[in-house]
Image 1 (cartoon, helix red, strand yellow):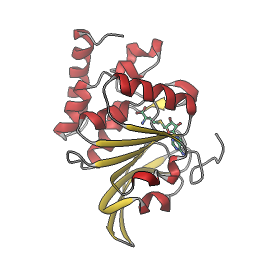
Image 2 (spheres, helix red, strand yellow):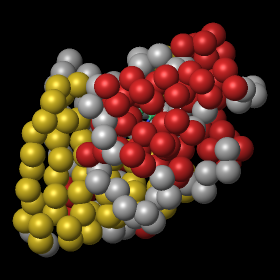
Image 3 (tube, protein in one colour):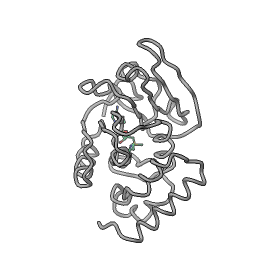
Image 4 (cartoon, protein in one colour):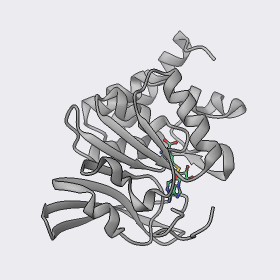
Length: 218
Ligand code: SAM
């Protein structure tokens, strides 16, 4: 599918909507204005790609609402070239936003079909994200430590495996709670064994699976 002037116009409108909703990080907003979200959603839903809502993708999962993508990205307090681990590649859209912002992106997906689709799409879009099929609640030890970790599924706990893959001074953003609602939570690694946790607004994400998620199996 092409990226037309109409799509660009719709992205400009989405940009303004996110500013009105309180997103202030110019680098995040600019990435939202640039990345063609309609390419990351399934056929019939492409029409709704620039509405501020979550949409269904394959395997019963969702592409997060643009506000949520922007909010989580802003909370990460990103600086160019940071190493960012994303847990929950999904459609690949959030990974593409992080790439557009100049991050070194490592993204893990539990579901094979989503992993394959997102890998293909990210390559097609020229995003140099490293993609991995596996249980992201265990992080991705091969490339640790990370400056930032972003969890894009609801987690019942802050997995210790993830905390330990943060750099000293690193920061994680994770929706923490039960299956119905979660609070966006930031975790900053102050020192080897010291972390500071802050609890923010309420959200609703699909559940994290895997060892430290809600379900062990696929
Ligand atoms: N970031 C995604 C995007 O931009 O489209 C949206 C993510 S969707 C809300 C949550 C994703 O987390 C789903 O694709 C789901 O399969 C994935 N997921 C759930 N548990 C996981 C785990 N343990 N490891 C990796 N991915 C997981």
